[in-house]
Amino acid sequence: MLTALDNIFHMMMDSSNGSSSISRPLLVAFGNPLLDMTAVVEDQSLHERFSLPTDGQLEVSEEQKELFNLVQEQYDVSCSAGGCALNSSRVFTWVLGQPKKALFMGGIGVDEAATRLLRIIHDSGVNTRMLEVTTESTGRCVALVLGVERCLCADIGAANYCPPEHVFQDFSISDNASELRPCLEDMALAPLLYVEGYFITHSFDTALMIAKYAKENKKTLIFNLCGSYVCENHPEELKQILPYVDILFGFVEEYKTLAKHVDLPALASAQPAGEASIVTSLPSILQAVSKYEAVVIAPSNSCADLAMNLSSQELDSSSRKESVVTNGSPDSENSNSHYFDNSEVLYDSDDPVSPSNEQVNILSIPPGKRKRSEKRKSKKSDSVFALRKCSDTSPCGTTNGTVPSMMRDKVVVMTQGSLPLMYVASDGIVREKHVAPLSVNSIVDTTGAGDSFVGGFLACLSVGRCLEDCIEGGMWAARQILQQKGCTIPQYPAEYLTK
Image 1 (spheres, rainbow, N blue to C red):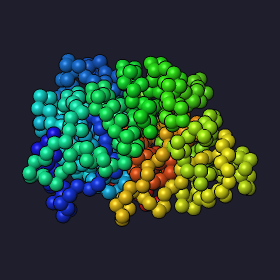
Image 2: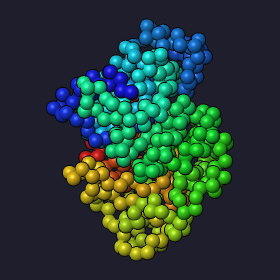
Image 3: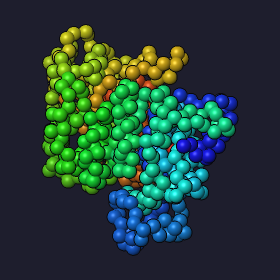
Image 4: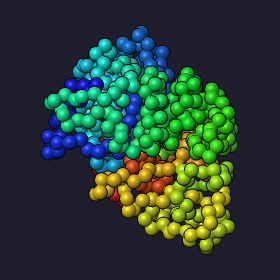
């Protein structure tokens, strides 16, 4: 059901801009809505008192819940909306520059925290379809920031509830908000569906139904592993949902934990012949990352540790160069149109078929000015970057009301701290994206940086940008959020998509 607060806020938003209807969504996200409270601490006294890690995350026990009141009483606390998918939805809206194009669904309580959280969400331009849970308090999370480290302590509360009927049941809407659509109708209109990993820990039946709906209705399904404990404690659920996923995000330690608890080669071999799936790419990206095994990687929680490696300035040409790690290109006859459009092929200096055989820094050339290769038979090699053509003619939200097809590829994105971001598409080639470090003095708070990367990536995807631009857009968004306290949307407008 929609909460009364949802109805009130939607009517306020509609009346404020003179509109009597809700905008067509581009993204529908599912996750744990939390009210984030950020406190900057000077020492580890709270960590020691409540047995907390200085850099990590956990769900608090009954004994640890005293922490929330203590922090509010003794520290200067700033509040913001929190939760992986919710953070990504807010950043998505900011980068896109259009309000009410993202819709978030989850469980929320009936209390002051809910009122405060919904106001923050709607002020950021995100619509909601919240399930009102009267028996639980609104989910909340305290972020203890100590230097560049942060400890996230969550009390999930009402966010633990999002049954299938909330999403799929065809219910009637209050007369006072008759213009509002049921959840399923919003999903039917949106090309992108996003489920965070934490969501499957309590509402897996709902998540699996969303995944099947996405496949049956040709939606792009995005999934974020979010945390190693999701992979460790819910391997059976992941085995069921991963074959439906089109785009997968996660930090390297999460992928390694996934590999320990899920037989990925067996899962890959079980996929129907000729059907593209991200699970067939997982073994190759894990094999490629093994070259970094000798390098010590700091413990991480979700992909937020990308934060420490993003530059606050545009990366220079040497750091922006993509490199190919391995080639595992499948036979084109077994594909089902899930490849990037080969009409735009970008070359590496070692590419023997490059017309000039000169070094080409593909990311130093603006997307609109890149030359397409001459039409020829597709030749896959370690040095050919086969990326989907950026759409200049049919971005999402065109005047004729149509939404073009989203990325047809299956993409796995792995962040790994100070080491290069790695990704692989259906061609089986694992590629790296080198990132420059961000000065410690420039980092205000790492909370939500990984979620911001996802939000920026999806905003670029929603307007038809190619894969490389989506990754660049994600990095750009994360750089901005790193310089805010909490996952707070900057006061200045996002400019990445206007370049």
